[in-house]
Length: 272
Image: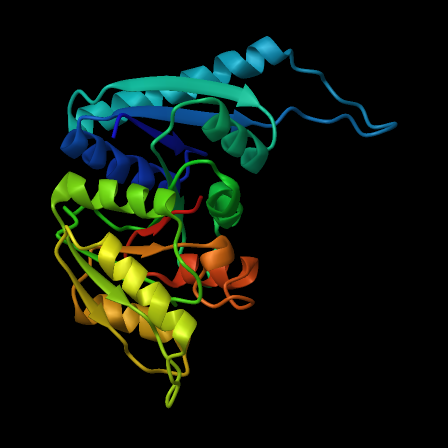
């Protein structure tokens, strides 16, 4: 891992994500890209507005980034950083950045369910679905811990593409983590041929890393995910969204958002 992109809005939740990313960067010898997208005031018809030059907004934004960088390094040591700022819409700019630059991972903070998510928290799931890089969301207050155990959620409804599996294995290899693959079944649900074939494909793909397979049963998908993670003391939860998501037709945007805000540990989203 070489470059970790950390969008920030300077909130407490965002600062916590920066702290997590800093420790992750130290553990993997990666560089942090601290990224702030600022909004340019849009004049409203017939309303008096004092126009602030774009250069002044950029200067003030960079000043805030330097302050964050200084605070982060005082806390975590001399982590290599790059500071970037520009105007625009948060989700669009983050997605564009991942497509135009070599970003290995995006780290963003989210607040727990029922709390005010903030600018980045409310957009995190959109970034998870459309960024060209894997995206990790960090729950409020979660402190970095070396991921000795990683829980991989999979429903076996389709074969996970090799590229996504490769990205997952690369992350696992950074820490030599053990992998806990689990599929939440509904009570009395029976496996079909397609699921069996997909399970075999994933089993073969993970054959060179330490892993175990589990099939817990529950009617409450989100509750069982957290229960499994807690029961096995997993340090990171991994999901593959899009066409090979948790439950096709269920793992849509709102369900992803719900899980992102309910998870007890960092949630890593990997797609094609």
